Amino acid sequence: MARIEAFELSRLDASSNGRKEKVAARKAMIAAMRTIVRTARGNELTPGTHNKLLMTRRRSDIGVLSAARGILRDAEAVKNELVVLGLPDTCINDLRSLVEIFESTMGGRRTGRDDMAKVEGREDAVIDTVSKALSKLDIVVPNVVRDDPGLIASWKRTREVVGGPAPKKRAAKSTVSAEVVPIAGDPSKKAS
Image 1 (cartoon, rainbow, N blue to C red):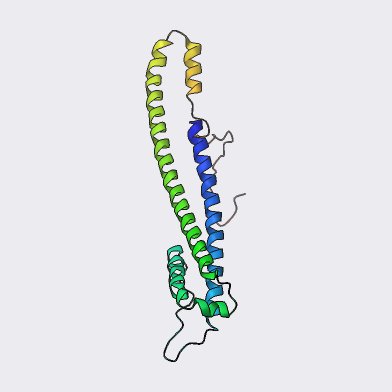
Image 2: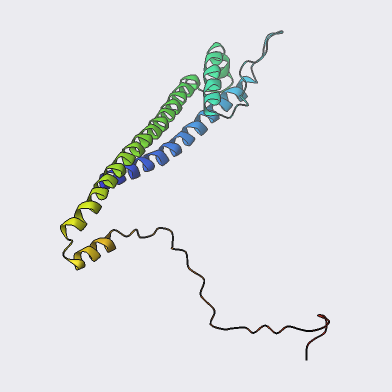
């Protein structure tokens, strides 16, 4: 059981770190995309054409990733113009690397979630096995120690569930008795 808890804690930690890595990779990729798109606005277009390098309005990871791939594809055609406008000649390769990093962090998060599901499945199996063993012990132990009331009491005390819901308290009986005195006549007038 301790191994399962340790494994689960390590996976939770990995999942948290994976989330942070993914957020950082996404921010870096979006910043690179914005730089390319902003720079592409300075590119003179021939009449009748439009700028294909636009930022996406999509917010999902898949949507942003798809837009980044589109920018990579379209930026290749105007790479020389982007360099003339001040971007380094590695700008497209830099974005490509950031896209790959972001994709790998997405995969790592997915793997972490799959591993967590496996741990939870194994945890259920362990709990089921332990529950069956305790059920058998509940039958065997009283039979084996039936002649020793101290051991039976110890077994029952050990088997108590601690930390479960508190037992319902019964209302305490009142020790004060009240005498009811009927009032004759008009109930709105006080009896004297």
